[in-house]
Amino acid sequence: MASKVVGVREFDSLIPLLRDRGYDVIGPTVDEGTIVLDHVATSADLPIGWTDHHDKGTYSLDKRADEAYFGYAVGPRTFKRWLYPPRQTILTIEHAETGLVFKPEPTADERYAFVGVRACEIAAMEIQDRVFAHDAFADPHYVERRARSLIVGVNCAVAGETCFCDSMGTGPECTAGYDLVITEVVSGERHEFIVESGTDEGETILTELDGRPTTPADRKEVRTIIEDTAASMTRTMPKDETYSLLTENLEHPIWDSIAERCLNCTNCTLVCPTCFCSTMEDMTDLDGRAVRKRRWDSCFNREFTFLHGHAVRFTTKSRYRQWMTHKLAYWYDQFGTSGCVGCGRCITWCPAKIDITEEIAHLAEQTREEVAT
Amino acid sequence: MTTTVTRRPTVAVWKFASCDGCQLTILDCEDEFLSIVGAIDIAYFPEATRAERGGPYDLSIVEGSITTVHDAERIHDIRAKSKALITIGACATAGGIQALKNWADVDEFAKIVYAHPEYIRSLSTSTPISDHVTVDFELRGCPISKHQLIDVIDAFVHGRKPNTPTHTVCVECKLRGTTCVMVAHDTPCMGPITQAGCGALCPAFNRGCYGCFGPSESPNIEALREAWHEIGVDDPHLVQALRTFNAYAPEFKEASETYA
Image (tube, rainbow over all chains, first blue to last red; front, top):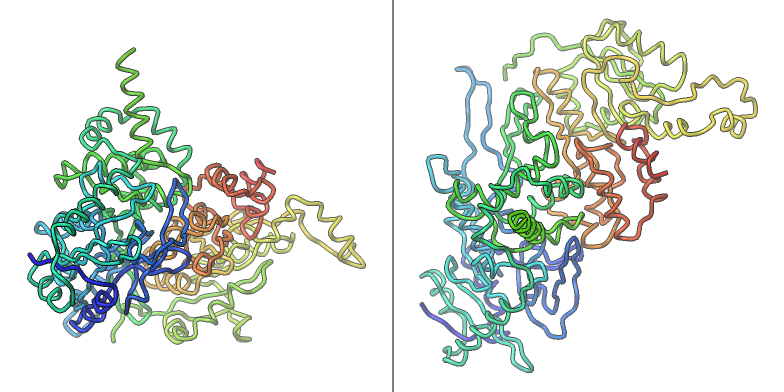
């Protein structure tokens, strides 16, 4: 595929170009003191000169010394908000002469261009594809939106302090699943974007951006940025061990320890780019219509575990264990992949400061000690 | 449009110790009001109409808490003439802000406030309706949400389960895309232990949640206490936050007494 080195001014034509091609552009922007994903109209909407710092239950938005466009890690929102929206009308039911009429909700015709998508987020979309797009129960709304979406990826030049994609094998480099991928080079006076295409649509867009051809030095620069970002990550997840570690320790005391700290707030699941639990809300209105809506839900909600009038996971312990064992173990059985992409959101956005990488490390350590004694 | 409703159910709206805000929510349903009165037959609602019809009623909607001997008797009479009884608002479901008197000396208050406290006949407690009679459904909030109220009335009319989630306000923040104010801004927020219903109104305006909808289905208040300590909020402030509109809701009450 093609590649090009694009200067700042030329790069600024990208978002308007995407809009001219009929895309609704979703990208990073500063709002509510955070870098969030939202509709963007020009480069001026991007978090230029901003970065973010993360720790357990802690987030801060800070100024950078330069004017980098993508010089931050990830914010609290994820692209699932647009592919798998918080509320989705499924069908409406109305009375007619002939009886009840069921009308499935037609798929909407949005065409999104997602800009600034990180490797972990592309990995998350590919995981959600396995959930929503792969069998007889494919969700037409998701499938349509996903098929029409354009992905403009970014190779991470900054790792958040809670990031661990390197150990999950999902980043920081975008290796596939993008239409275009950007590596931003900001050093001294130099501020350029090395842009590569991954699809025909990406290549067509790239031809409309002015720039110079890439050189071997540019490609080396890309490698250096990716390697430095990977090397800067301090958290790790033992990806290949979590299945046995968790499934063999379902009654371990660690679950009690986590349950004491867990707020049941659901933040971890709702900021997670792969979590997909939902509930159905059947509403009638006083004029005799009924609507079925799907709404984001969470395995941390007791009400979510109700089966036939009884909550099957009544305690926080059982619900936390459900989440972690599903995400890091049973997901392999169900979808052939871990449910975690190492984006670190569940660590940053947990008000109780629970860190899954730490909990897994504790469990591994305690299990080793138990075996040793 | 045909509907399955043949006879409109008769509805009575009752007031106990409260500010009237919740029953006014019925009148605030401006766009939906004609649909509401088309679906139910309002038989008793002094706040809205002087026309009154005696019971029995298919549904009684009760606002306010029990603070007097007279009211403690009146609620039994209302229950006896109501097929179903729904309580609305923090006063009716948890005792309201006036339940703060449950921790105080009411005679002492009366002496300070009234020139002739001997005329005051008040119980020493403010308690929810469910402490006195069987309640079929409790709709939380200070005030209640108009949308939830319409849904509950609609659910009653159609004989279905209301859509009133018992999860936390945090879910509503995520649904609307609001950034967590506690994580991003160190703002003490009751959201992680508070039931949804308001649509995460305060966090959306960069404020912490005040707990207007009472405890969520499984609140871990000790964990919230730890999180608040981390951002520099001490126990006296936590106790104040727990003792507002839903102070006497069992989980908030127990926690505030533990940390007081």
